[in-house]
Length: 459
Image (cartoon, rainbow, N blue to C red; front, side, top):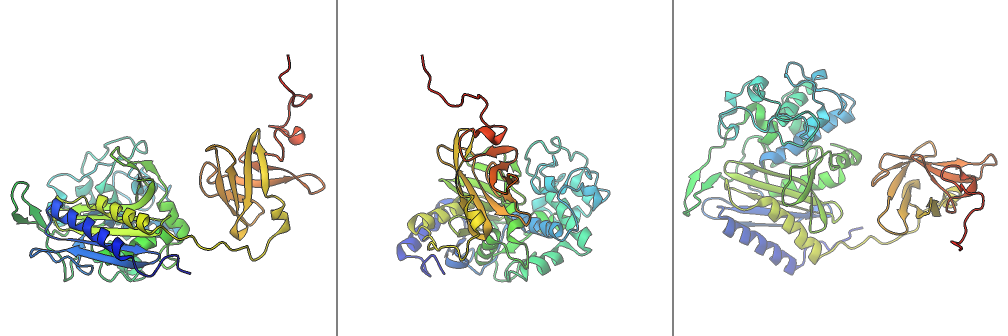
């Protein structure tokens, strides 16, 4: 059952068009294309073209570092197939790099301490043939920071991950990408080389309204860090996959793992972090996940608000100009505010386990009151009654326990502790004892301690 009308309201469409028109004009880009997806489908596209660049939902633009998210999906597929573990050192699967002690997870989250860029000349504006081997990409001074201690964005790290994919699969990165992501998701207008119609890349003079063509170089080994061309339509569909997963490519739980912060991002004007191949930002009270991208001649931004079910992509063909990531975030916000998500109708559970039902209600951790609710699929939700204390949702396991899915207790085990007669005595959550009354005397730690129990202050 859809939670939205099939199309956007005319006033919302005009607001979206106005936003991209301002971006194209003030950003001084030859063309700008944008798209919005909602609840599983693309619901709006718009463009501001000029004589120097066709702006259309089917015109390819170079997407730069959004390519990294595609590469990360390929790595996560290898993990899900059991071909590697994210905590494996790189050397286990790709030998001779000189950085084999860093883990795959650190490379995905940009915390491996590698340099941001390969040695000169500037890799984005020179052919990849100048760097035919990984040694040419990594160079000598590859350790910019201690391993694992901070987020430091690294294009070289994602070059290594692309080579890892190729080594494990025994095929070029580009071929693996086409077979395992592009074809299953029907991203027919996404490719490593441009396919007509596509926009030309331009540099715009900072002090005059004149243009300089930018070369579209084949990045060679650096391709997994920024090679791809795509359209706003394809990117919106890819963003929906990043929100929901697709068992043909990557299950929902693994995509959710990619959206989980792995290391704090470098400080900027947004509250931000980095997951596994995805940027995560908080803007206007909304969490957005996706990625930005740029290469000489092109700018790109892609965000999805999972809670709102809305994604937006913005592409431009200028080296510097509109802040496409900001514009994409604004498009998500425009739709979310003008047409907020209509909640799905409440429905009772189809059946209930009476033993689980008996667990619901108030529980106490010391003097802190928590409510325990039964949710779908035999799950549980534990929430504080007052204040912003610790709370989590729990998914049922097959052994009568539950595992925390979010919040403070993410990954922790909730289990029921019973008396000898089978009745429930307390809940144990990572050593925290939850009882039916505050400091229940017979509950052990943290049960009642003073034998006289509760009392008034007295004088």
